[in-house]
Length: 430
Image 1: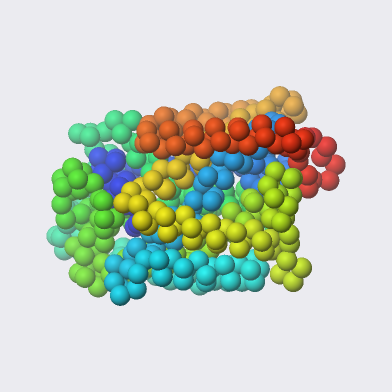
Image 2: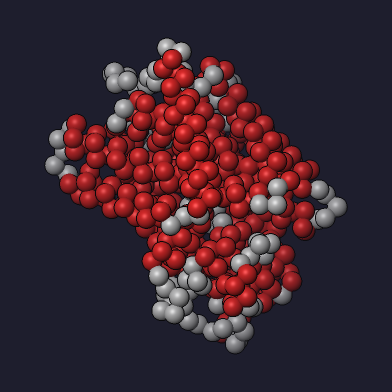
């Protein structure tokens, strides 16, 4: 997650929500907070890298863990490609002399080198980027609010949060299925469970804090932008195929300089800061599945010097280039990637909620009904409704991916390599 993530998909969420873009982000934040609570419970039980793959495997059964890992693998493998592609397209629009493929290769190469030097280097780079993103966001909000006070835009209104003329729950949840793209990445914190030195409870607190802070920033900036959209009716009718709606709102507030600043900041944030940590999380998932013999053994190699899964990091970079270049060639590449990513993540999160109930309530006979029944059940219900109202094409392609995972799982059994889980001392479940 990055503070200015909504800038890149603002127009799609605005059009999809009937103008209630702030409400879409609010509902998305609530849904992700429930999911983070379930993550916190499973991290406490199994403090391992591998995210929902490990938690579903140990909380339910190893084959279920494989399929959950396979589902979220769709998210993790494609997220870096989407981030690089959006950043490359934005930078190409700013500097047309440099082609999209060159920007894409530059972003991937830089991030791969940084990640190979270890998690501390990654943390340092992301801190520097974070300061820059917050500065750009502060400038936009200051100029935007001042413009509204001066009478530009549409004046203050509650319509970005609720509009009785357009409101329906299916409409809002359909937009939430797009908006959650800005939140995806909080779960990557759990990928560092084995590198964290603050105890399992710190993982849960970090997730909750990151979601709450990001959610507030997302709601505020989209609310201000919604009040500055030059042509609301046109945006609702035609959507935002070029992805420039937020920058158009910025131009309405401060002129071309603010529009360019937001566009470049978005490109750098998505292409460096966001994709940098996305590559970290993806490489840890590949490492965790390889360690359990469910992916090729070379992916479990750890760099002795830097303590990172070097081969998994490099493979993630190679895949990002290949997928990114292919999707850049397609006219619907960004939309297709976004839909597939959200489906994979939300499907895996559904399994996570089930794992909490099964592991704690059924296996452990827990009496903590709030954390081990109410929270995961409500979280499951919200996400299920989002998936039901998601893009139909995303649903179809997502189920094809899950079906491919079932085929791979059957192949593992036939080859005598049934899913087993390792890495947790004293845990003999398989």
